[in-house]
Image (cartoon, rainbow, N blue to C red; front, side, top):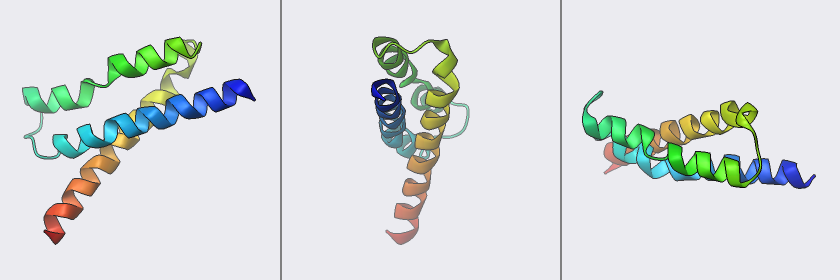
Length: 85
Protein backbone atom coordinates (compact mmCIF):
# COMPACT_ATOMS: atom_id res chain seq x y z
CA UNK A 1 0.00 0.00 0.00
CA UNK A 2 2.84 2.37 0.81
CA UNK A 3 4.41 1.99 -2.64
CA UNK A 4 1.03 2.53 -4.32
CA UNK A 5 0.66 5.85 -2.48
CA UNK A 6 4.21 6.82 -3.42
CA UNK A 7 3.50 6.02 -7.06
CA UNK A 8 0.29 8.03 -6.95
CA UNK A 9 2.18 10.95 -5.39
CA UNK A 10 4.97 10.90 -7.96
CA UNK A 11 2.42 10.61 -10.77
CA UNK A 12 0.37 13.55 -9.47
CA UNK A 13 3.50 15.63 -8.99
CA UNK A 14 4.56 14.90 -12.56
CA UNK A 15 1.18 16.11 -13.76
CA UNK A 16 1.15 19.21 -11.54
CA UNK A 17 4.72 20.20 -12.40
CA UNK A 18 3.86 20.14 -16.09
CA UNK A 19 0.68 22.24 -15.88
CA UNK A 20 2.46 25.62 -15.91
CA UNK A 21 4.95 24.46 -18.55
CA UNK A 22 2.11 23.33 -20.79
CA UNK A 23 0.45 26.68 -20.24
CA UNK A 24 3.62 28.55 -21.22
CA UNK A 25 4.39 26.20 -24.12
CA UNK A 26 1.09 27.08 -25.72
CA UNK A 27 2.37 30.64 -26.33
CA UNK A 28 5.44 29.44 -28.25
CA UNK A 29 5.82 28.54 -31.88
CA UNK A 30 6.24 24.79 -32.35
CA UNK A 31 9.76 23.37 -32.40
CA UNK A 32 11.48 26.56 -31.24
CA UNK A 33 13.98 26.56 -28.40
CA UNK A 34 11.37 27.83 -25.91
CA UNK A 35 8.90 25.14 -26.98
CA UNK A 36 11.49 22.38 -26.44
CA UNK A 37 12.52 23.97 -23.16
CA UNK A 38 8.98 23.94 -21.75
CA UNK A 39 8.41 20.38 -22.93
CA UNK A 40 11.62 18.97 -21.43
CA UNK A 41 12.48 21.10 -18.38
CA UNK A 42 10.48 18.98 -15.94
CA UNK A 43 12.08 15.67 -16.92
CA UNK A 44 15.10 15.89 -14.55
CA UNK A 45 12.79 16.73 -11.63
CA UNK A 46 10.51 13.80 -12.44
CA UNK A 47 13.49 11.45 -12.76
CA UNK A 48 14.79 12.66 -9.39
CA UNK A 49 11.40 12.11 -7.75
CA UNK A 50 11.05 8.64 -9.28
CA UNK A 51 14.52 7.54 -8.15
CA UNK A 52 14.19 9.03 -4.65
CA UNK A 53 10.86 7.22 -4.26
CA UNK A 54 12.59 3.94 -5.07
CA UNK A 55 10.91 3.15 -8.38
CA UNK A 56 12.82 1.50 -11.20
CA UNK A 57 12.81 2.42 -14.86
CA UNK A 58 9.72 0.23 -15.31
CA UNK A 59 7.59 3.11 -14.02
CA UNK A 60 8.80 5.63 -16.62
CA UNK A 61 5.69 5.18 -18.84
CA UNK A 62 3.41 6.08 -15.93
CA UNK A 63 5.27 9.26 -15.02
CA UNK A 64 5.77 10.15 -18.68
CA UNK A 65 2.05 9.77 -19.31
CA UNK A 66 1.28 12.05 -16.37
CA UNK A 67 3.78 14.62 -17.64
CA UNK A 68 2.21 14.60 -21.11
CA UNK A 69 -1.24 14.90 -19.56
CA UNK A 70 -0.04 17.91 -17.55
CA UNK A 71 1.32 19.54 -20.70
CA UNK A 72 -1.93 18.97 -22.57
CA UNK A 73 -4.13 20.19 -19.71
CA UNK A 74 -1.95 23.29 -19.23
CA UNK A 75 -2.20 24.08 -22.94
CA UNK A 76 -5.96 23.64 -22.87
CA UNK A 77 -6.23 26.01 -19.88
CA UNK A 78 -4.21 28.60 -21.80
CA UNK A 79 -6.49 28.33 -24.84
CA UNK A 80 -9.61 28.69 -22.69
CA UNK A 81 -8.24 31.82 -20.99
CA UNK A 82 -7.40 33.33 -24.39
CA UNK A 83 -10.92 32.63 -25.69
CA UNK A 84 -12.69 34.07 -22.65
CA UNK A 85 -10.32 36.95 -21.95
